Structures are given as structure tokens and as C-alpha cells.
Amino acid sequence: MLNPLWLRSFSVLVELGSFTRCAEQLDLTQAAVSQHIQKLEERLGPLLIRRPRQIELTPAGRVLLDYCKEVSAADLRLQNRLSALDELLGEVGLICPGSIGLMVFPLLLDLQQGNPGLVIRQRFAPDWEVLEAVLDNRFELGLTTIKPDDPRLSTHRFAEEPLELIVPAAEQVDSYDDLLRIGFIDHPDGRAMANRLLSRYYPDTPGISKLPCRGFINQIGLILEPVARGLGCTVLPRYARQAFSRPEAIKVIEGPVVVMDTLWLLHRSEWPLTARAERIIQQLRSHLQRI
Image 1 (cartoon, rainbow, N blue to C red):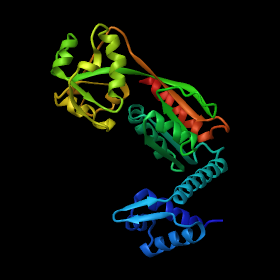
Image 2 (image 1 turned 90 degrees about the horizontal axis):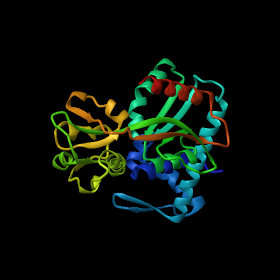
Image 3 (image 1 turned 135 degrees about the vertical axis):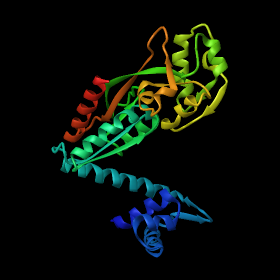
Image 4 (image 1 turned 180 degrees about the vertical axis):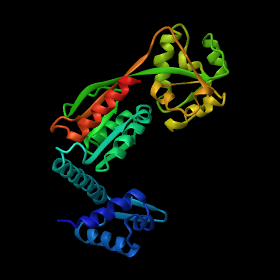
């Protein structure tokens, strides 16, 4: 059996791409990290190609990295099972889109602050990464805006997330022509969200395809900053807008219909949720029903 310390050094080294940073994170010397890699290579053959400022994995290195992920997932499952019946003790991982993530993050902090034995890991990610993370057992819970059909996943309708057309507070929007003048602030899901909303708000127009792009932001917490500064409009879920710290600088343009996205709760179907995960789901549902 491979030494778990060697595997840990290998995983962190690949993640950080630097022997120096790996040693610092693990509180080891560089010599110790190098020795761990050497021991692995004596057993498995060459794992790394060392280049200036870059580390490249050999085919054997890629296989070992997959093995490290499997070991880590198995260790997490063991910890979860050992404390599965205690709803106030242990770790829960939640991976979700940024908009709903911004909304529930303060609630998760409240839960953890009130229950010191509870450890909550939250990650913001697009739908495809959420699916992969839950399937790989890296996160117990996931939220997505698409309903997967993978039989390994248990899927439940979790919440409705209204989309909103958001413009600078000083702008007057009476027609699609006003959006052409204002321009669009894009983001990773921006065009898809805008297509869904604009096709319902302005059905006889070209939609997002003709709006001039005034900028692109890939950080959910910053997308509304250029809108607040008058640089363009955007389309976001309501939860992201409600989490913005300067609501007086933006405004929502109401349309003829409400455009909804459905959020789906995912977890592996092969085993039941831990008691602490069930508790968190209950708290989140209750919170969302009140807003």
C-alpha cells in the first residue's frame, strides 16, 4: 500500500505546481516533498516531467492523480458514515451556482457559528462542474439550473430563481431601443440568461445578439459593479441582485411575464444523506421560502 503522506505530497504538488509552495502548504521542507515523490517514482516509475516553472504529468502520473482523488473521496465517505447520524457534527460539502451561493452563504455561516462541530464547505461553480463534483463524491450536495438524467444522481426540485433585467439606477428603459443604447455587461451565463429573458420581454426583437457588449465579468459578486457605474445592463437571477451591496445604484426593469429558472438539488442516489445534510437542506428551504 502506498504511503498516504507520499500521496498527499503528490496531490498538493500537482495542484500548486511548485515544490516550494507545496512544502509551505504542508509545513514540510522541499527536501521532504522531493523524497516523497522519489519514493513514489521508485514504486511506480516516472510521474512528473520537471520544466522551468512548470510540472507536467506523465501518463503514470495522471493515473496516480486519479487514484489520489479516489482515496480522498473514500476517506470523506468514511468520515461521513462514522458521523452520519449526528446532525450537528461533521462536514457537509455544497457546490452550487454563484447566485444562489451568494444568497445562502450567510445562512451557512450562521449554522456553523451556532454549531462549532459542523464544518461546511461551499464552492461556487457552473452546472457541469457541480455534476462532476457530486458524481465524484467530492461534494455531498449540489444545486444546478439543469435537471440531469444520470441514474447515479437523486434529483429534487429545490427552488425557483427569477431572472431579472438590471440597469443603472439613472437609466429610463421604455423599449428595446433603450437597451441598444445602454449596452450589455456579459458574464459566463449572461447570454443564455439574456436570451431567455429578452425573448419574453421583447419577442419581436433580435434579443441579445444585437446588444453591444460593454464588458465581461466572470466573478458573480462583481457583475453588478459596472452596471452600478452606468456602464451597461445585465441579466442575473434575483438572488444575485439581492446580495449586491449597493442596491440604490441599480434598478430592475419589470417585464410582461416573470421568467423563472428552476434550481435542482442533487446528491448520490446510492446512499442516504447524512443527518447534517438533511438539516442544512431543511434550513435552506425554510430560508428561501421567507424571501
